[in-house]
Image 1 (cartoon, rainbow, N blue to C red):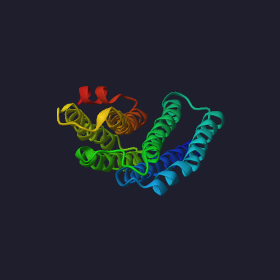
Image 2: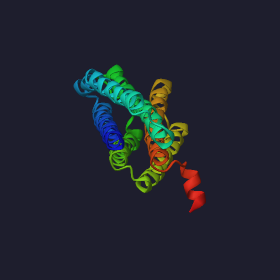
Image 3: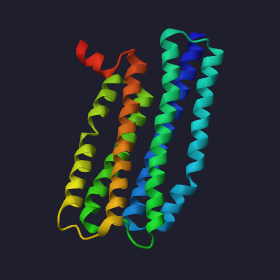
Image 4: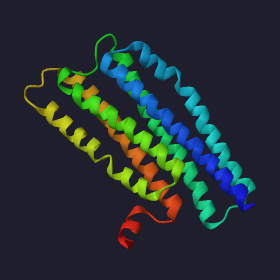
Length: 220
């Protein structure tokens, strides 16, 4: 019974890792569509999102099977509940990548981003994809130390997001309100994407140790 539980739990985490890798690729393509005003890429991200949602449903089914068939208690139940929460976090990452692609589509054939902020979004896109890859690794490994390290990796995203506002508030900004709204929304999408990757890491820490990151740090 215990071996069956461990195998099914590993299968669930593997599927979750696959999904977060997919939403990483989704964000990579959405960022390219945004930077290059590429309508074909934007449409590809939008049309390819349904299979990711199907994969999320598969992960939820695996979690329900674990709960129904393995009669989990204590730590096992904690891990399964974390599995449901992880599906939700990954789904939100995918939704944010979708939002980026939709902005690119809406502004086509023009670029949604003024030249002054293009570099910010190139780096934010790179960091977002890197965080998704890291989330995939910690889901597969269940290594709480790697998960703790991931939680610190979004500091660079927060810094970029803050600096973005200094550019828009500058008196030399000449691109009007519509561009400012787009940039504000897009910056928020990337920031929230990173936040959800961090929440995945937090849940892996709890899943692996039964403690919050703060409790682990306090105990060390």
